[in-house]
Length: 515
Image (cartoon, rainbow, N blue to C red; front, top):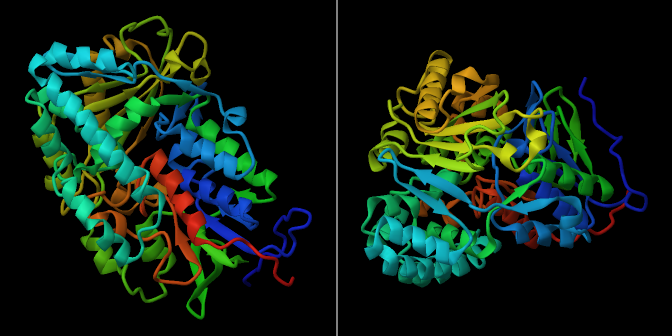
């Protein structure tokens, strides 16, 4: 027999407040819940995992805390503004520390590039690798700032669900050559291939192919320069836990270990959800932080779609998959002194490797790695004297004709990752290994319900961005809204938090309704 939940916790004085259900306790869903709570809604957040945070959550293994997803905060003001909208002080709840240097890039020929907040040091790094590219660097910074003001502060913080919104900005897109790729733009400013890589790889952090996504994304260089790179003590998990705390203080409820099976519609409007066990929760509005593909293909499976049909989703280009090896080491806190918080190890190929990942769907023998070592900043991630790491390799998603069999290849590929680390960064690693966990695209598919096991939902190509991306206000059902990586403005912490800011502009303030 289906059970209808009538025991939702409510804050005194809010018994008659409209009820909002948020599907998914990722950073986008938590941000949405905070915004809705501030607007007077009675909010219930539902998530199938055991901790809040979604891809920004963590797990414990033999005394090591592994931050599973994002490791840095690049635009802290989006969090401060979110907290302020709720009458709270972000810095009172979260201990955010600036990271300096941001990261070190290493190439197989032994050359390096260190990114930092100091403009003079950055100029010196450019000049050290290629003196003739210094003038191009100055131009690139101006290019990046122009795209930041248009792409992030303008388009990224308002809804783009009307075609007219797109038509109005097309001239500006043309002026900024949004049709040009990130790499193509970097190639116009830098002659040195290493610098072209160093100033074009950033779209990979949000699931984009630098050789095909729009050059609007060079705005990341301005974000880093202007606002710095930060680390939250306790990891991004600490931010998620603080967000859940705000929601509870608002009278909302974060309900974990809860799988949502279907969004329920009545007369074309979202009116609640059915849980995996059959329980029904009623709501006045529903916000999905689940992947847009999962929302439309699975959660609305019993309803005809006007725009986001299964066929259209199948034709979409999805972001790459991720292979992530989380590992701990014993007695190494004072070892590998040249290895900082973030290191990027490059393959001898750049464009060829990216093409194998995004276009060919081929698991190449070579790899590039993003290595996170939070223990140099946050001792709480590991037992005393030990270290915690993760090494991330972009790999093909599962949607290609002959996807990688990760059940068979997982350990083989992990050994390849270890060999690269021992050769290029962490000599003797195998002698110190302790805790170990591996996430593959299979994990992203099963744990996060990501279509094709993609790491960042729909790839942010120009015809899959802004109006072309799944909208924050759904055209498939009244009262249904989307936040998170798969909707506007896109993936990454600033993007998913901003998606909730856009949501708050679309959802009216709550007004008491009859009980």
